Image (cartoon, rainbow, N blue to C red; front, side):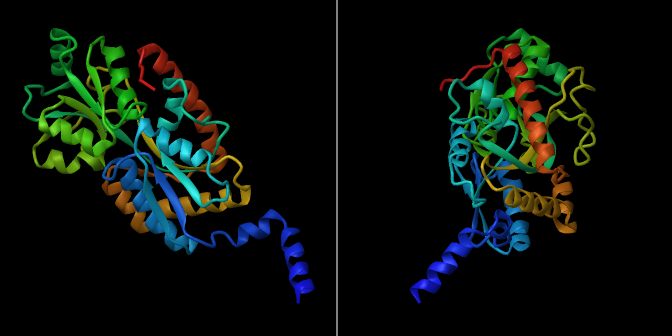
Length: 320
């Protein structure tokens, strides 16, 4: 009996990687999010996880690990076992932090394999509805009249919300103070409470607050007006030459077998374009995508360089 078991073990170890990939996943998969629940990344992650659970035949569990501008989550996944069971869902923050932090704890281009970009959407510049600011021009005028007195919140240092604010300041020659929070929800809570005067957030996170009248949208950072907010101008229409689109993508540890990465990418694409998920994304102002691993890897490389230039030009800094 021992001889038979030993022979089976040897045979199993001799199997090519593709054979192991065919058995993947054999247990639940963890999808790590570097933000608190309720923000755009978390909303997209939970929507994706529910569909992936059906497509992969195993439960996909979202685990929130907020903090350090998503670096806690990024480092955790980067150094996890490269077996496809611990994945990361993030935005451009994973690329931004390479230049924003001296020691981010990972290398976006060496420690991760891009799996697929699930969806994308613009940020929207919003202010507390109690402020007298009714337009981007009003905001610029107020910020120039009172330099350093206005504050803007973000989901954390290194997020697209943070860098959108820094880019806005550079382009408009204004002095507005950045106040980072551990996620979109606390950042918006601070805005509604009047602790800060403005913020940048995605449509799913602000939609209810805009409808209730607590927040006033001034401009979208996307290249075109958002379908869910057709009356809100783009930044370019408002006179600021700024275009920032937020993507939500899945990454795996770099050494994850390519067969597993490809299988995950196919599942993410199917999830994004399944009728129910596609409709829910569109209802939230997001565009379903589902890129290939190769396209995502190229995109990461471009964004590390692009955001490094923005960080340098803006002088953005964090305490790390």
